[in-house]
Image 1 (cartoon, rainbow, N blue to C red):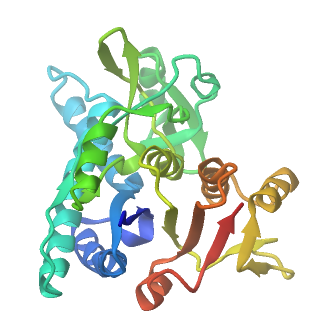
Image 2: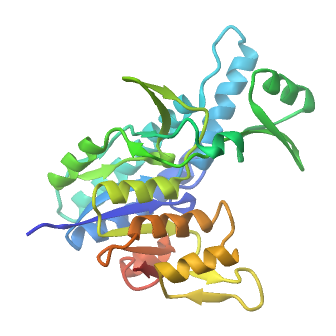
Image 3: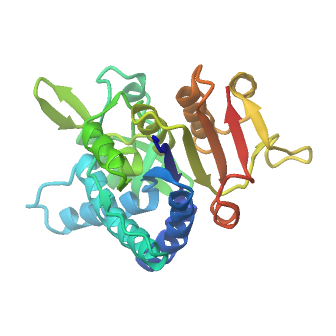
Length: 310
């Protein structure tokens, strides 16, 4: 009998920020992941990388400032670095948790490239802040390099595009590992954004929304469920207001209505809801659970949270 496939998207709360925080957080996340494995799911995992890729980008930029003879590190390479070291902690934490429960499965991290469209509107409207706070003089230098910069309350920061994921280059490898009943970590941080140019793939100066990429991953492996672990236990209407209303369940049609009403904040809950709508589509089988890691750890993520379905 075919096992059900599930994609678990780990948010910032499941990873922490500093290296010690990340190591501790991944051990907690591993317990939630292994709960699903115990429930006989084939599991693929994606994760955020916001603080991590920002730290890498800042460190590499500072290194090039001190040693100008070195070439600056592209965003695509910073994304690849973050996938490697987050995957390292995650796969070891999950492996340990599996063995503690008497389960042997290989856990693998796949360095994942995600194709984006050269003509995506996002490239004309960069919005994602990355890297360190800069002075006005440093910002002018960045702009002379052809990079986009925005002024914030604390200084200047570089901004990059957030295009939609079109395809996952290594999807056949992910499918093969899942079919072998192994645990796969893929599309970390939304994947490494690349632009197909003939047979070559060129790294794009961009980032991909991690939830959108998780939805694309879940779609391409034909998963039955996408679980998005975030900082809140349930999706709420009128979030942060006196009439805030937590939602236990909603249909795709309702989710689309709420999006039209502007109920979900761009950059936080909106990408999660949009990923859910795109993943489910017209399927009566697929569903999405949005919940908090602590709740998922306690109840295996199947009872608490907001469930979205057709």
